[in-house]
View 1 (cartoon, one colour):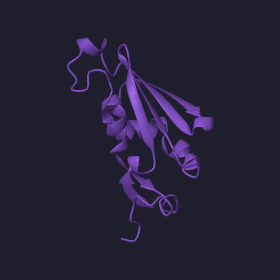
View 2: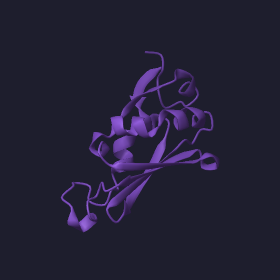
View 3: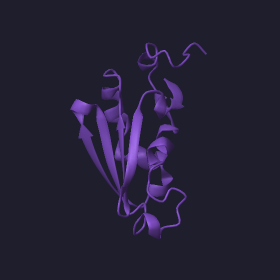
Length: 119
Protein backbone atom coordinates (compact mmCIF):
# COMPACT_ATOMS: atom_id res chain seq x y z
CA UNK A 1 0.00 0.00 0.00
CA UNK A 2 1.07 3.58 -0.65
CA UNK A 3 -0.48 6.58 1.05
CA UNK A 4 -1.20 8.84 -1.92
CA UNK A 5 -3.86 11.32 -3.06
CA UNK A 6 -7.06 9.62 -4.17
CA UNK A 7 -6.68 11.59 -7.40
CA UNK A 8 -3.72 9.40 -8.31
CA UNK A 9 -6.20 6.72 -9.42
CA UNK A 10 -9.59 8.47 -9.63
CA UNK A 11 -11.33 11.45 -11.19
CA UNK A 12 -14.18 13.46 -9.67
CA UNK A 13 -16.91 15.90 -10.56
CA UNK A 14 -19.03 17.81 -8.08
CA UNK A 15 -21.69 20.48 -7.90
CA UNK A 16 -24.83 21.62 -6.14
CA UNK A 17 -28.55 20.98 -6.05
CA UNK A 18 -29.91 23.67 -3.76
CA UNK A 19 -28.40 23.16 -0.32
CA UNK A 20 -27.01 19.74 -1.23
CA UNK A 21 -23.67 19.01 -2.77
CA UNK A 22 -23.09 15.96 -4.91
CA UNK A 23 -19.81 14.36 -5.90
CA UNK A 24 -19.06 11.52 -8.25
CA UNK A 25 -15.74 9.69 -8.17
CA UNK A 26 -14.78 7.29 -10.93
CA UNK A 27 -11.91 5.03 -11.87
CA UNK A 28 -10.60 5.48 -15.42
CA UNK A 29 -8.74 2.17 -15.04
CA UNK A 30 -11.03 -0.87 -14.72
CA UNK A 31 -8.50 -2.52 -12.36
CA UNK A 32 -9.11 0.28 -9.83
CA UNK A 33 -12.91 -0.09 -9.69
CA UNK A 34 -13.12 -3.05 -7.24
CA UNK A 35 -10.79 -1.23 -4.83
CA UNK A 36 -12.55 2.15 -5.25
CA UNK A 37 -16.04 0.80 -4.55
CA UNK A 38 -14.87 -0.83 -1.32
CA UNK A 39 -12.52 1.97 -0.23
CA UNK A 40 -15.03 4.82 -0.67
CA UNK A 41 -17.67 3.87 1.85
CA UNK A 42 -19.83 6.45 3.57
CA UNK A 43 -17.76 5.92 6.73
CA UNK A 44 -14.52 6.58 4.84
CA UNK A 45 -15.97 9.65 3.15
CA UNK A 46 -16.89 11.06 6.57
CA UNK A 47 -13.31 10.46 7.71
CA UNK A 48 -11.86 12.16 4.64
CA UNK A 49 -14.28 15.10 4.72
CA UNK A 50 -14.89 15.98 8.38
CA UNK A 51 -17.21 18.84 7.37
CA UNK A 52 -19.92 16.27 6.59
CA UNK A 53 -19.67 14.42 9.91
CA UNK A 54 -23.18 15.42 11.02
CA UNK A 55 -24.83 15.47 7.59
CA UNK A 56 -26.95 12.87 5.86
CA UNK A 57 -24.89 11.18 3.15
CA UNK A 58 -26.48 9.14 0.38
CA UNK A 59 -24.24 6.78 -1.59
CA UNK A 60 -24.86 5.25 -5.02
CA UNK A 61 -22.72 2.91 -7.12
CA UNK A 62 -22.61 2.95 -10.91
CA UNK A 63 -20.61 -0.19 -11.82
CA UNK A 64 -20.78 0.31 -15.59
CA UNK A 65 -19.25 3.76 -15.12
CA UNK A 66 -16.85 2.49 -12.42
CA UNK A 67 -18.20 5.30 -10.23
CA UNK A 68 -19.37 6.02 -6.71
CA UNK A 69 -21.67 8.99 -6.21
CA UNK A 70 -22.50 10.78 -2.97
CA UNK A 71 -25.20 13.32 -2.11
CA UNK A 72 -24.13 15.45 0.86
CA UNK A 73 -27.42 16.73 2.24
CA UNK A 74 -27.22 20.23 3.64
CA UNK A 75 -23.51 20.88 3.00
CA UNK A 76 -24.40 24.15 1.24
CA UNK A 77 -26.93 25.34 3.80
CA UNK A 78 -30.01 26.69 2.06
CA UNK A 79 -28.26 27.09 -1.29
CA UNK A 80 -25.23 28.54 -3.04
CA UNK A 81 -25.97 32.24 -2.72
CA UNK A 82 -27.20 31.91 0.86
CA UNK A 83 -24.13 30.37 2.51
CA UNK A 84 -20.74 31.64 3.60
CA UNK A 85 -18.63 28.68 2.46
CA UNK A 86 -15.58 29.41 0.33
CA UNK A 87 -16.97 26.92 -2.20
CA UNK A 88 -20.57 28.19 -2.27
CA UNK A 89 -21.86 25.85 -4.98
CA UNK A 90 -19.81 22.74 -4.20
CA UNK A 91 -17.68 22.79 -7.35
CA UNK A 92 -14.45 22.11 -5.44
CA UNK A 93 -15.70 19.16 -3.37
CA UNK A 94 -14.44 16.67 -5.95
CA UNK A 95 -10.95 18.14 -6.10
CA UNK A 96 -10.88 18.45 -2.30
CA UNK A 97 -11.64 14.74 -2.09
CA UNK A 98 -9.10 13.82 -4.79
CA UNK A 99 -6.41 15.62 -2.78
CA UNK A 100 -7.03 13.47 0.31
CA UNK A 101 -4.40 10.79 0.96
CA UNK A 102 -5.64 7.22 1.11
CA UNK A 103 -3.84 3.86 1.18
CA UNK A 104 -3.77 2.63 -2.44
CA UNK A 105 -2.54 -0.87 -3.36
CA UNK A 106 0.77 -0.64 -5.20
CA UNK A 107 -0.47 -3.16 -7.78
CA UNK A 108 -2.93 -0.50 -8.96
CA UNK A 109 -0.15 2.05 -9.42
CA UNK A 110 2.50 0.02 -11.19
CA UNK A 111 1.02 0.30 -14.70
CA UNK A 112 -0.37 3.82 -14.36
CA UNK A 113 2.90 5.53 -15.22
CA UNK A 114 1.97 8.66 -13.26
CA UNK A 115 3.44 7.58 -9.95
CA UNK A 116 6.95 6.43 -9.06
CA UNK A 117 6.35 3.41 -6.82
CA UNK A 118 10.01 2.61 -6.22
CA UNK A 119 10.55 4.78 -3.13
